[in-house]
Image (tube, rainbow, N blue to C red; front, side):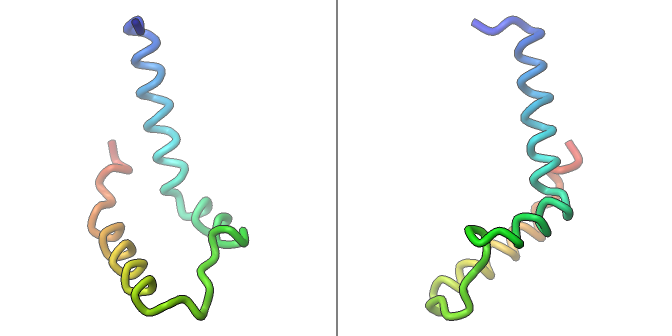
Length: 66
């Protein structure tokens, strides 16, 4: 069982991790890593899915403000 203090600490940590992963500097850094790059010759279906993810990300930026 988590005490209130541990629960609050875990919540603050989760919020901070979300904030950092949503930061533009983190996005730029991840794009430099081979594992996070998209290949130029990926199938069109996957490109469409990636585009949909980008659109959804653009609409749902409110979680960063929490």
